[in-house]
Amino acid sequence: MMEQNNFTSGYAPVNHGELYYEVAGSGQPVLLIHAGVADLKMWDGQFDLFSRSYRVIRYDTRGYGRSRTENTEYSNRQDILDLFSHLGVDQASIIGVSRGGQIAIDFTIEHPERVSALVPVAAGISGFEFQPDDSEEAQHENELFIRMDDLWQKKAFDELAELEAHVWADGPSQPVGRAAEKIRAYVRNTVRSNFSRQDGQATPIPLFPPAYARLGEIRQPTLVLIGEYDSTGAKAAAAELECQIPQARMVGIPHAAHMIPLEQPAKFNELVLAFLKEG
Image 1 (cartoon, helix red, strand yellow):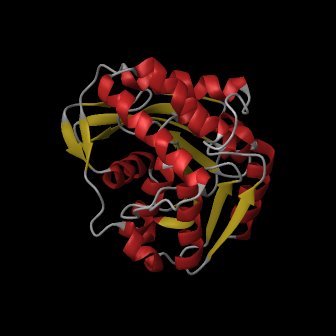
Image 2 (cartoon, one colour; image 1 turned 45 degrees about the horizontal axis):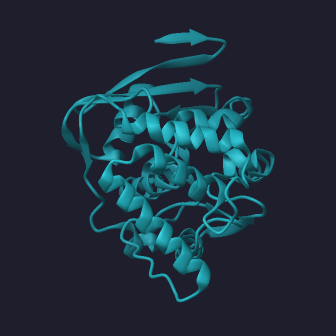
């Protein structure tokens, strides 16, 4: 464990593994959950700023970054409970992007007493099966996702990392290279790093029943964020969250794709800090 200037980092024990975490600040806890094409470094634009008002926790989910796992089945929700126990957290506001947003939603449904507010950003929804329409945009996206699956099967990881950088940083409907190269490189390099991991294979245990049929159970104030250039599937999921969660409101972020905290940090920070202050 390392401690300096109210900053703490270390490893929290979880079932057949350990989670690397960083904590800064004091006050009401805020948990940041990274996207599936990222690690905790994606929160560099929020971590210090948010810690001026809150006790901010960011961590590498199992199978990512500096966290470690054995070959095992595991629950992302239980991992968060174990992290909270290690850090002495009773309740937190939870902010999650993409896969991290799905984890945040699932955790809120399974453990509502541990969540004070929820911010799903470009979030997935467990149990939600998006059906693309016949539009040219949706069909193009579908072709890209089929191509990604094909590259994964072929273990063409360099080409796959490049395509993931395009889809998630540029936006699937946008020209290659639309996003800043710094963001594209971060996604590309993080995806490559994850493909080359040497620790165990961890299989997540899904929430049952899944979240899509249970969104009405979420009673916490909820801010849904979605980028203008994100996929049609992500936009459809955001609309479902706004419609089905009683206290949800959705805000669209212009000139951003999937990785909103990286691409529009000033706007993201302004919206999220104002939302947390309301609570």
